[in-house]
Image (cartoon, rainbow, N blue to C red; front, side, top):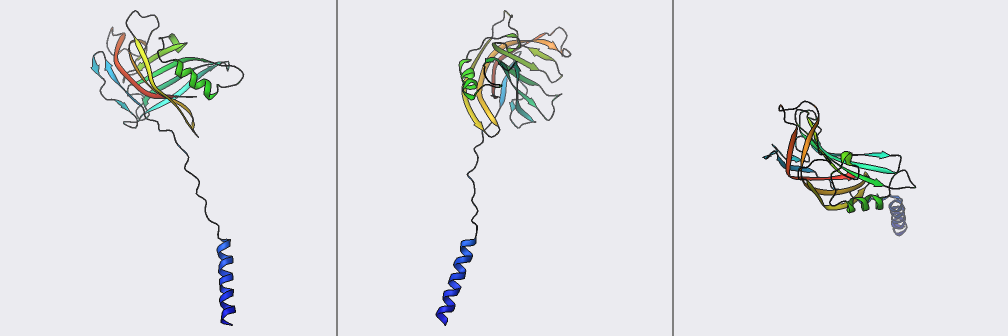
Length: 208
């Protein structure tokens, strides 16, 4: 009798154990690590503070202009989301990516474009080249020029493509020197229609 009771208990325990649903923990989804920064000299003076990711609300924002679903210009800007109207910001525009047969380019086309533009020329509106725009804390906007006779250069390095569930990214570092010229807003200094950016280092990304 004792043996029968014991066997019954074992059987019930096995049935209950087999009915327990074990939680399956999915593998963590990889996330692209995105950190931005801008530093350099404006008219010979170091910028008051580096535009570091997460400091004073600074972050990298991206967008693009698509024309007729065949070409695109990509923008990457570092600005403060906490004080957007009273903090300086900088934006890089790079174009022009061309493709056909789809509404948007493929990841391979996206990657190949940025890999090819390591030494881009300065171009108005970033059409087939680079355009840099700097906005002062007072809202004056200065933009690079294609036609300037002043020395200017730009080099993209550390170009890497990474993807996660938020999108496809082309991460980069851009070292540059250029003049930017007043294009909008109130001039902070009378007759000061240009600024010289030296040893500019922009660490950011473009998003497909």
